[in-house]
Structure formats: structure tokens, C-alpha cells
Amino acid sequence: MIRRLQGPAGFSLVEVVLAIGVASFCLLTVLALLPTGLKTNQIATDSTKANQVISQIIADLRADVRLPPGQASKESTQGFSLHVHWAAVATPDTIYFTQDGRQTGQVNQGTVPADAAFAATVRYLFPPTLTTSIAQIVVAWPAASVHVDPNTGVIDTTSAVGSVNVFTAVNR
Image (tube, rainbow, N blue to C red):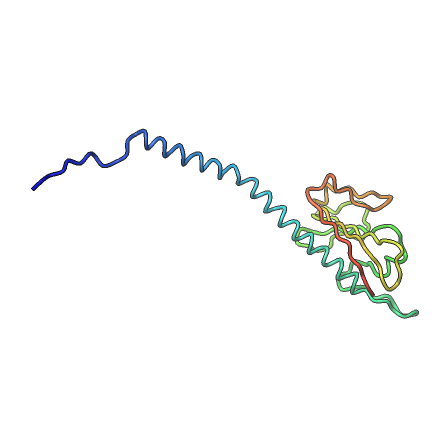
């Protein structure tokens, strides 16, 4: 019978140090990407909520029907009070929304409500008619950092973290 001499089974200290160095470099890289991933996730979540706000506004504008003369104006189900406003007023409407997408405050309120997370403006492009209107809807967040020009009603999105801009045609 022939016996083989085997060396000690295991890793040398140099190999262990190199393995720990490579593993720590990889872990550090992953941890460095974590804040960027979290920020991207928050922006994507806010963008999705802003698109839901835009969908609510478009639904409100499309639900508004043209009534025959003499009938009372009916509010839409959302309660944004935008009924026939596009044909009567040339300035945009400003609406504030909470983090969960509910309207807060009044339409065209001068100050930003404390619980507002999103600011939306609805600008009606001319010439509006009673049957068809084109609207530009801009939603920006956070509402506290968004400046709405009191003369034009347009949102200045330079100070906002994010914004969504949509043009829509509303046929009635």
C-alpha cells in the first residue's frame, strides 16, 4: 500500500485577506448604490401618483356635460368645481392634492394647504368652445416648494422635485 502525503487542507492568510478585500469592495459598491435606488423609487412612486391625479382631473373635465339653457349646473363627481370654467375664464385653475391623491383646499386657493403634496394647474388653450377644449395639465411635487405665478396661474417647475406635463383634448 502506497501512502500519499497531503499538504494541509485550508486557505493561507493571504488568500483569506484577498477574499475579504474583494467581498468588502463588492458590498461597498452595493451599499453606495442604495441611496440612488431609493431616490429613484420615490420619484417613480410620486410620478405614478401624479399621473393618477392627472387622470382624476381629465375624468372630471370629461364628466362635465353641456347643459341646455335654464338647467342648473351640476358638479362633477370629483368636486373640483371646474364646470364650464374653461369657457368663462382665461386663467389656469390651480388644485392641490394630498399624498394619497385627494383634493385639499379650494380651487385657485392663494396659499398652499398644509397637507398638500401635489400642485396641479389646468390651463385651457384658446380658442375654447363649449364642445371641445384642449387643456394643458401640469402636476408638480412637493407642493410646498412649487411656485404658482399669481398673474398667469402657471406652475414654475424649476424648484420642484418632479413634474408631469400632459396635453389633453376634452370633447363634450
